[in-house]
Image (cartoon, rainbow, N blue to C red; front, side):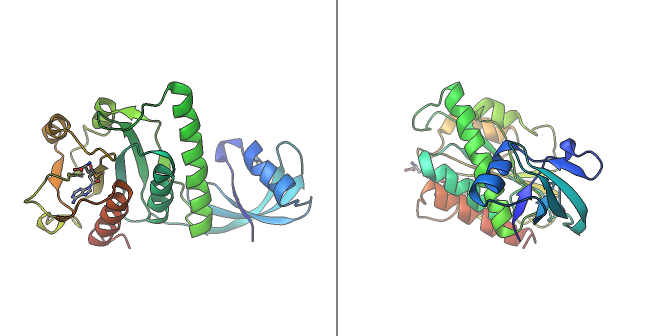
Length: 245
Ligand code: SAH
């Protein structure tokens, strides 16, 4: 069955208008017709059986009934990610979605390669959201991944900083003593935040600033992993330790 996302705020009774992007996919790519059945996801965990009612720039759909509701997906896990170049960031968005990350907070720090201007940032954000939605459909994740706009490092550190119930782990290539196994309380934590650097890593000052806000530095082992490998590994291990798989 073909699956599409809709914005629940556009719902009026059992009628829903799909975004232009989802509509284009339905009418131009898949050439679906009025009367065809599809599945609609509201991004909040609800999946509906639906029938196409009108095809156009914005496809109209008639909701027939809720077929599934995804309960909470374990403890919330957020990933603060230094922006990576080109497709590596796409990979991180896709894999974090599949691995059940709640939300991604992309940031630009001192060692990010190449700075993005405002219009590039907007385009990248749209692209990551598209990749996130496609990954949700593919892996049958009913609650969308939340992807923030790109922030500066200082702004990113400020996010959720007043919530002291979050276990904050900063994966630092220069941390030699504390390993993940030394963080004993991962499955006791209410929610977890992971921070991973860009290809150039973190500066000592950046690590110092994060520590002041309660981030603990952690090693992923003696080998320096490529940034995208580090994120995928850190998320996988922490999801397991947190009891989220
Ligand atoms: N350019 C840096 C490496 C950066 S790797 C250097 O040569 O030292 C990119 C990011 O992946 C790092 O900032 C960190 O968040 C993560 N990472 C890679 N290997 C790691 C390790 N062994 N332990 C902890 N984090 C690691």
